[in-house]
Amino acid sequence: MIAYVIYCMPIPSQSAPAPRVLLRDDVFARLREAIVDGTLSPGEQLRDQDVAAWLGVSRTPVREALLRLQQGGLVVAAPNRSTVVSTLDVRATRDAHAVVAAMHGLAVRSAVSQLTADDLERMRAANDRFAAALRAGDADAALGADDELHGIPVAAAGNEAVRAVLDQFSPLLRRVERLRFSSVSGRGSVDLHARLVERCQQGDADGAVAVSFETWQTLEPLLAP
Image (cartoon, rainbow, N blue to C red; front, side, top):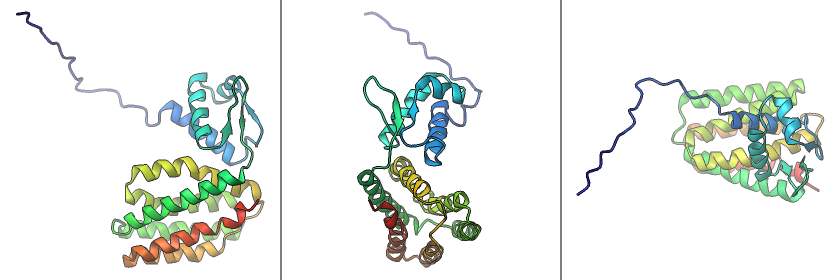
């Protein structure tokens, strides 16, 4: 009989903390934001080496980021050709809108029983900032506050599949809003947000889901051909 001696690598008692955000995730987030806010415009070519030089990274995380952006519909890659920022595709955007609305409804339904008093107060505060940004005509601040408000139920729901889907498709909708409107609209959403918080506070899951759906339907006019 042959005896085998198995040596196990000792687990270090201390180790350097892992980077808070992996390089590829950081590159992806920066490119996505540049596309959504219009820094990189539709039809613009994205050459690996140029993007890498711009961001101060190697080409590997850039390629990985571009592949993820392609899956989300923000860029288009053709064989043996440069990747380009996608143009507005009405069908793709409407499909993304339907998915995003459904995912937020699912998150709200799960979150109603999980939301704390602090969560509800943070939603109210985000809506106040949203309203103030609308009055000031600050589209970026309004969209940021809107994202924050809707993100609270998503976080409370704790559904990673929902979070992943929203992370993939929400930027496509935000891009449409930024590209198609030079002024901020959506004052009706302030009241809808307030109603959403109220339904959540009451523990009315069905009512909260209905308001969430109504809120996301306000984007419908932006999606017309």
